[in-house]
Length: 558
Image 1 (tube, one colour):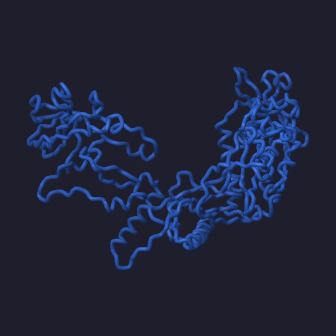
Image 2 (cartoon, helix red, strand yellow; image 1 turned 90 degrees about the horizontal axis):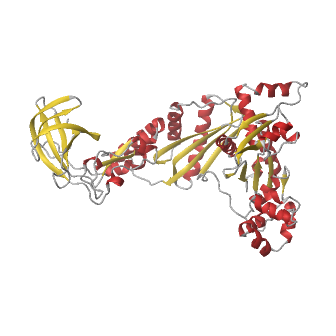
Image 3 (spheres, helix red, strand yellow; image 1 turned 180 degrees about the horizontal axis):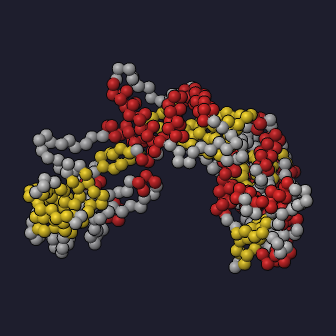
């Protein structure tokens, strides 16, 4: 089994590099930067620093190379920085924007390995075990990666070692080191202790003890280090020396299957993109067929030459085993994008991944018409979900409850289509009017009712500024709320995702009693003189639950 190889990336100037790229795109002060690059008479631009508030004072949190050359440093108060260089450009720290930029770089690094982990605040860890030979070796891979990031405007330091701690320590001191397996201890022995990335208090304590390099610390007994600085630091030290290891935490789970195509000349036309996806789909299907699997979730990644990455995903209700189906789904998805796929100067890498797969269950399809019908419905659902989103294509499943608004729940059709087809609903009695209305209001709408107090049926009511005179009425049908479900939990749940936001639970007008349960309802089926039929209810039981009634219109019969 091959030993792990970790590539550590460190972007020490990430905040100021991000700002420089934004200025170049916006044209503002980026004009001075462009002029400095094109005119030999202009050697430098104004130093740039990023400041953040610490202990009620503004201090330098990041700076560019120009600011570093004139003696500025991280942690220096802003007032001192202005005294050294009055014409510096000062920007406020924006950790959110920095994090977004780092995540964008991590997305781009997926082209080298799918195992990419964040190493905050300005670093990345790439597990390149077993994939370096695809790029000509570890040195060629690192040179290609760092060269591309440099062309994109980032200052970068990189190193490769057998453990994340060793590779990270090397990037903080020197760029381009590649440590052979088993040589980690010698590689980091001469590095300053701050390169370990331990807390500042630990680093100061080591220096006060005369331990200035990692080799000095490693020469002391482990029990001494653990007693003074803790077991966590001892474990970090052993990892840097190659005597221990810790796994990285990749940003994304590893897909079940991946196929990709790289281009010497970037592609930009819709036809070329479609042909590439079709070819990759056939290759992916062939790979999955060998293991008897089909794709349930597919992602297409488009890597632009300027470092931008766009990922398009589609889901299916059943495992997909045909390349034509994948082509059709991605065609629908790309056509429906609110933000069209922008190739810029072209895509030099297109990747198709089966993020989630299932075993394919063989069914007889030639003679069974129901199976063919189900396949057509599933294909239609997949196409609609690809175009408008899976959370907007729903089916309803019956629930074991007598409370009207909870008699069914909407669920995504792709995940529950089979359950919906097997669901059993109460059948309407032949020749009898329906017990429940075709249209129900969510929530029920309050109305003003004239009725004999306390138990008489409604004689007339006012709804939406309209007076309705009742000609016929049937009821009451008493429905008591489920005492084992508390009102706060059952009737007003907090939406926790986009699906719950688009399909909120009904019945939020119910009033709770002192014990937390909702009030009893007495339902009436009423018909006015114009023939319109209503379903309304009176809330509460007189004297037992309420002293005055509230009335609601819950639905309209067809």
